[in-house]
Length: 198
Image 1: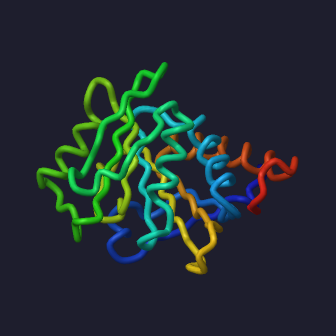
Image 2 (image 1 turned 135 degrees about the vertical axis):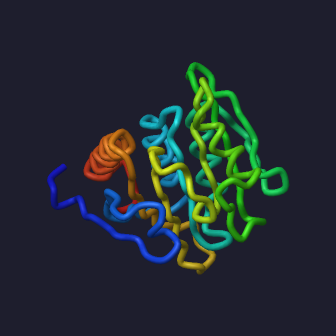
Image 3 (image 1 turned 60 degrees about the vertical axis):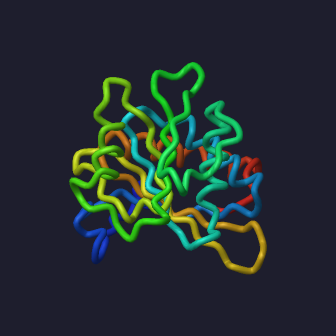
């Protein structure tokens, strides 16, 4: 991948406190749930303990579907959205980290030092650091030194399964991992094995 695929994006408003500069990538279009599952499988190959995946998008954009696809690719089938319990922990087979799936839909924001903030941060600091996938994650500010992917899911709101995934990374390790994943996505697209566009 050449530098033309990279762009620096600055965030505004509340997100400006999280990161002034992130490594961003062109949007990936998924035409249907099969494309979404293929995207999740590629990304699952690059995740690690201590990574935060912030999922954002309107209600019904597909945050839970994407999380289920990612969890399935990691060998954790059938997870449900933990909206009313905030988070659920899933052991990933043959990996040295767990998957923590959090849903912050019922929060307007998660203030630093709150019980929820401390709980989510603890998963990243524990000896067995978790992969943390957070739906409505823009409502929480992860620790400043945490590696993270920001994935915004956009839907055309026309009843179709078509989605656009806008991804960026913050942190050296997270950026390297997302760059490798994006290379694999481009390879699949070029080979005709991925229906969407990049």
